[in-house]
Length: 202
Image 1 (spheres, rainbow, N blue to C red):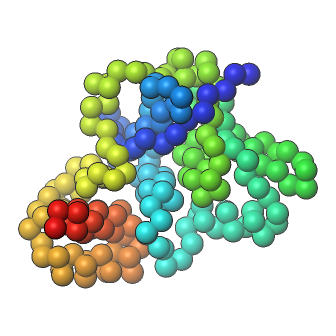
Image 2: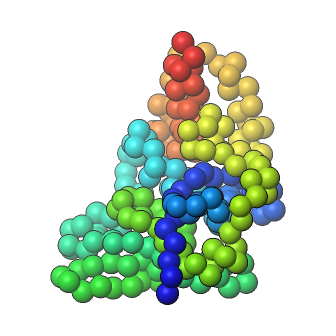
């Protein structure tokens, strides 16, 4: 079984599936990309895992899983995107406990969210990347990096917060605090990115 290592490149809103996002993975030693459609909650969890500046008031599901695993001496070694069937990706989490290697079936979005928290590599079977990967940058021209000021590109967010640049910096700070207290981490990420953008242009 030949495996290819991947890295997370970004997330974009999917026009093809309402309420879904496309997670874009790229091969570590190449230019091919692999798009995986994930839900909004999974996109939020992946974002929080990548952005160490966002602190949640209570542990989310993937943080809870990590704490649980560490308490029982379970190490997540890596994940494998192992199957593609009818447009759905299937993955395995490969764990280690007392020298026993355990392979656990997982949704790909959950596996990737956990790999971030365990700092574990992401692999895909080469034949899956050959089948579903692409090298055409135009295919996902709306792709957004995590450092981009408009990370979440969904229609509702654009409608509700399209005038965010007109809000004063002090009010944005207050809104950020309220968003974190209300556990609205998607909005918190948007507000935090706007603050960071303003700092960068001073």
